[in-house]
Length: 357
Image (cartoon, rainbow, N blue to C red; front, side):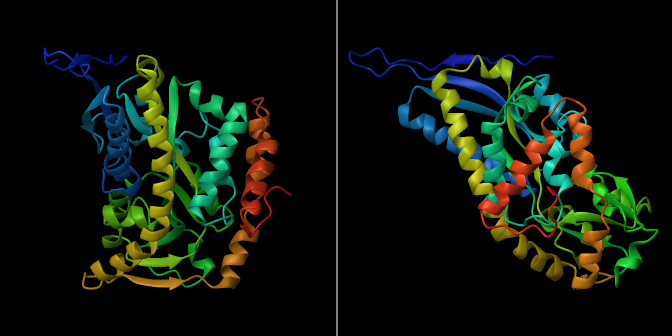
C-alpha cells in the first residue's frame, strides 16, 4: 500500500495584514522496536522535536505526528519494506537485518574489532553515503530517502552460564542479529538468528544459551534476567541503519519541510552517536544493579587479552568474503572497504585487524 500525505489548512483570521495560514502535514512515524531502545527513543525525543523547531522558525508548516512505535505496524524483519511500501511514512530501517538487499551497508558488520567510537564511525558512513553513489543508491532504490544514520554501542556476550575462556563457547548456541552471527565463526559457537525483540524468549525457551548483544539493548529488554553472565569482549560498534522516509511521501512535501527533515536527521545522528558513548557504560552499571538480587545474580568479567586476540585472529577473512560476494553483484565493495577503514584511521582509530589488507 502507498500511504497518502494529507494536509489541512489552519484557519486564517480575516483581518488586514494577518499572517498567512499555516499548513499542517500529517505524517506517520513508526518502528519495529520500542522507544526504550535509545536510537528509537531519540526519533521521538530528538528528531521529531527538531523538525518541529526548525519549521516553527518560519511558521509556514507544522507536522501532525501519528506515532506507531514498538511494532504496532510491522516487525523487526520488515523495517525496509514497511517504509518502501508506505506502511509508515517515516521509520527506522534496520539495515543489518537486510544483508541481501543492502550489501554495502554491511561493511561494519564484516570488520569487527575495528572501532568503538560511534561518532567517528557515523562520520565515515555519512561521508561514504555522500561520495559513493552505489551506497546512496542502495537505500534510494527502495523508494526511500535517508534522513539520519544510526549505530550501536559495542558488542559483548550475555550468557546463561559463565564464560571463563574462549574455549567455553565451543558448542554453545548464541543468538545474534543477522549478519553479526559471522562474528562467532572460529569460536565453535553456533549462531542463532534473532533480534532484541526475540532474544529473551529464545534464551528462556532454550533455543539459545545467550546472546551477542549490546548493553543499551540488553537493559531495556531485561535480557540479564535470563542471561545473567556478562563477558566483556568489546567487539566494536556497527552501522545499524537509519531513519528514512518513503520517497512518494517525500516528493509531496514542500522544499522547506524536506530541508527541515534533512537538517533534523543530521542533528539526530550526531546526538545519537554522542548519547551512545555516554549511555553505554551507565547501562552496564544499571544492569549490574538491577540484577544483583535476582535468583541468578548478574556477574561481569573481561575476556582475557589472550583470548580476545585469539578470537580476532581466529576469524576467517570476513571482509574479503563479503567484498568478493558484493563485487560479484557489480558493487565496488573493495573500494568501499578501503574507504571505510581509511576513514577510521584518519579519525585516529586503530583497528585491531587490518581488514583492508
